[in-house]
Amino acid sequence: MATFAKLVAFSSLAAATACGTGLAAGDKTCTAMGSREGVGVDIKAPYAAKVAAASMKICWNGTCRTSKVELMPSSTTVPQGCTGDSPDDSCGAAASPTGDKHGFADVQGLPKSAVQVTVDLRDASGKRLLNKERNVTPRASYPNGPDCEEGRPQASLIVTEGHVTERL
Image 1 (tube, rainbow, N blue to C red):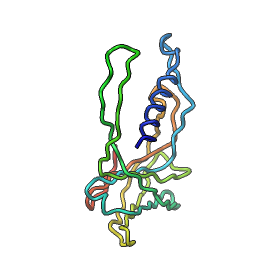
Image 2 (cartoon, helix red, strand yellow):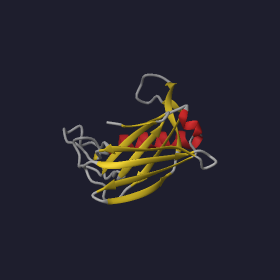
Image 3 (cartoon, rainbow, N blue to C red):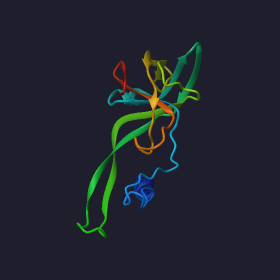
Image 4 (cartoon, helix red, strand yellow):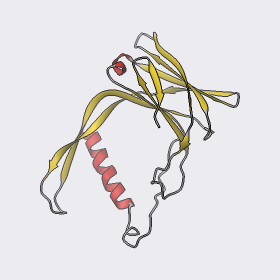
């Protein structure tokens, strides 16, 4: 938990520093931050508690790629208050588990056109819980915001009890 809090604090500092002084002059400063190419999945609680393993098969133009998906517990940020209102004061936040799980399948060459994704979820004993196909359309990501260079294509899915939908 302490490591996550340090990561959040460092990320916030890095993001603030990356904005640079160009913004004061009216320029948009874009960092060298990149984005991963592939398909993300969010598995919602309480269903997520049953899921121990995930994989995705992504197909387009007669070619398929299968990726194992490492599932991680999801959390949300809970404000912990500030020491005051001046710019030198500090604010805190803590991560709070949501019960959801998330993961990402890296897919090289992913097009920005319709692909077929098959999500396969299994429990701790290896028993299949879900095997569903969805057509999704990966879109360009913009890791530095819409005014900066386009990143790699991504799609995202949401899994609830027995259902898979595309996150738009």
